[in-house]
Length: 429
RNA sequence: GCGGUAGUGGUGAAGUGGUUAACACAUCGGAUUGUGGUUCCGACACGCGUGGGUUCGAUUCCCACCUACCGCCCCA
Image 1 (tube, rainbow, N blue to C red):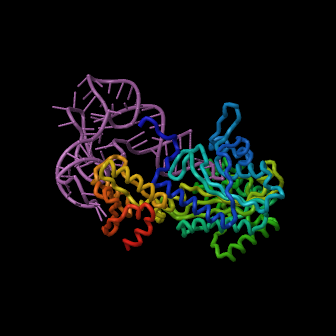
Image 2 (cartoon, rainbow, N blue to C red):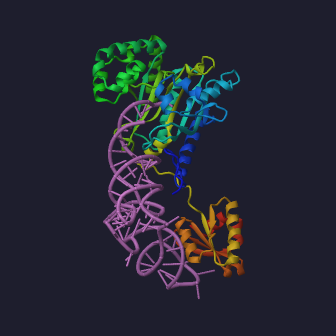
Image 3 (cartoon, protein in one colour):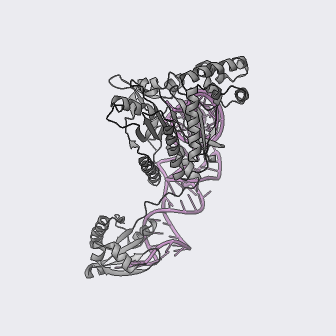
């Protein structure tokens, strides 16, 4: 064991990669139905792209980012999330222009990087699937994005979902609320956990989702952001909840839910699922929200946006815990046994002919004895085992056996080479 | 970055300061010279995460490091 993979990375091996493909395929199909198109952006960006969008929250930028200087002394960051890069591309390629119909709807999937201590479902290289929609302030788009996320998870067999929503309102709302929160917390300063003492002035909203029990007590009595919404913010939020009701999407309003980033406004949401593999109770699998200021922040015009991201590793963990039945994609249709050097050559031709007909076919490449070859056929879960020996070679025939019921028949070899499907329907039930 | 637990073959694992590191599964070979999923027999650890130390001798004791898992910070 000379070399090992870097800390916090994983090899996705055959047997598991099929699950990934399935999850990705499901996303592509569903997102297409919503008219979202794929965008592929670089896996690394200039450090500034992320430091800018992450809003100076020092921990994220200094501690959690995978960054380095390249040979040209450019400060590079391996993307820690999808949104910033998509927004950068949106601006750089002027997708805000009149040529692109609004809203611009895009999705992405791929690896993301965070320099953190690995735990189950949290790795340094992990994968996200996400969507972003630009160019509409309508609450309807908020709800479309949410419903798409819910649909997606349901399609993957995750049904005991909890959708939690909240609003961060507009700038005015947040400024008012931030002050109100500080005013409330300051008298309790000494009772707060050390972490929350830190957070109080840096990012007071973060105190709200502290896990420390002593903080919980104080937070319970804290003012709610819902009482500080401006008229516009209130209107937006009301519309969102009404639309969710109309669509029959169940949700809870959690006024203590916040985001670590400054660019979010109005609707934010998290979708949680219940699985003991991911910890006690409901844990977040998907998170998203509206970010009307972000395009501008990266040098574009004033252009609203909304989106979500979800972690694929956690999703897969969840599906496994629910014993989700992935479609079987690696079953073999035919295994061709060749019982001599000559027969082996002919077997290769048969295998090729079958593959051309779109059957999954394979043969032995280790010059193994017939016995071992038949074992392989069984092991590989082949539906049919075709046998070629000197006997068959002479008469230009081939032996076909249905592995499920043991029925077998000897036929002209060209029947297999020309139309295997017809041969099966003719000879086997 | 901080704290805790662990690290033996392809896999699950037992075990000991000292000649051959259990057992099971898987794999390969044979019984059965052309038919599988059962059975029987046989083979299968460059040696016990890496490096150093203690010792006559270490996989077993000590130290450092690496990695995994759990918790904290963080969670875009």
